[in-house]
Image (cartoon, rainbow, N blue to C red; front, side, top):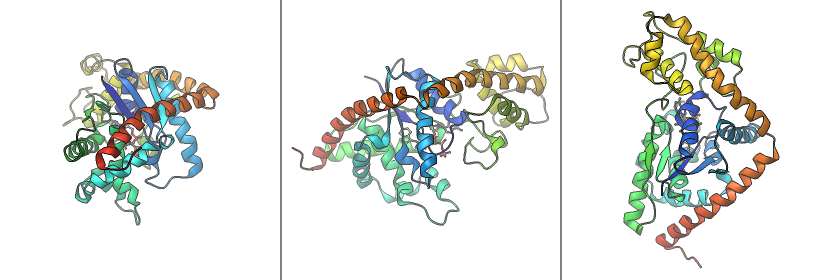
Length: 327
Ligand code: ATP
Ligand code: LTN
């Protein structure tokens, strides 16, 4: 059986990078895989969070999952903090993680850089992420390119645990789709599009108004060549925009290149904005209907119950394997 586990942290407003790298994949994969899609709120608090903001954003992300097309009848949707097995197996995975390998994680290095104090949890974050995945015996994990290293560590930990304590975990495969797995900033194509960027024009949020989306894309950096061509080495700015176009229109890179070959950047950027707006407006409408609804609460309670059942089975196996007393 093919099983997916993945999630988007409620650590900031959702941007189109998370949509391209993760959410749009979730929607596609639910047709073929048994999906466990969660909101890793325990991961969000590895850096300081305002409690009120965290509360709101957590429900927001859940609502966006559904608004974007994740179907609660097909996928199990839940909060990480509602299933205590994550924290328990997370601790057990910490015991199997080496200090040196955690120190080599680039996300840790980036997030700790320039801060006076960094939480211990930010350091052990990848062990908890491994637990998230291994608890559900996931075979596949759809993520953006930036999570590749964490997935490699997860695989190492699964293999290490299995060889030390006996076959317990499925070794998961990352799914990093070509197009949309690395959407870069609109102001600088060498940096991943991220809500942590202080320049608001560098990212497009799922909740941005059509006018803001149009303005941000009109301002997006390009080059002076005026040809719409996909070439990350020579034309990273334009290649990034073509990729965004492909994610939002479902068209191939070649089709987009062909259409805009002789049109210049003005027309290309305008039509790109309409493709993004055309996709996001219905998602925003559905989001508004669901975000404060009883239905959403019911879906999340149901999801937590189903997830806990699946997680408990692995947790008990892992505890027995390590030599904990179980009755
Ligand atoms: P932060 O930048 O604060 O660390 P994040 O956006 O990387 O947050 P999440 O919100 O948890 O972290 O990311 C959810 C998913 O979206 C992950 O699979 C991540 O790889 C993917 N993702 C995030 N940003 C991008 C991006 N710019 N392009 C493609 N995928 C992305
Ligand atoms: N580390 C991821 C979020 C995350 C995750 C997971 C993704 C936590 N646990 C399990 C996939 C599977 C991030 O920073 N985007």
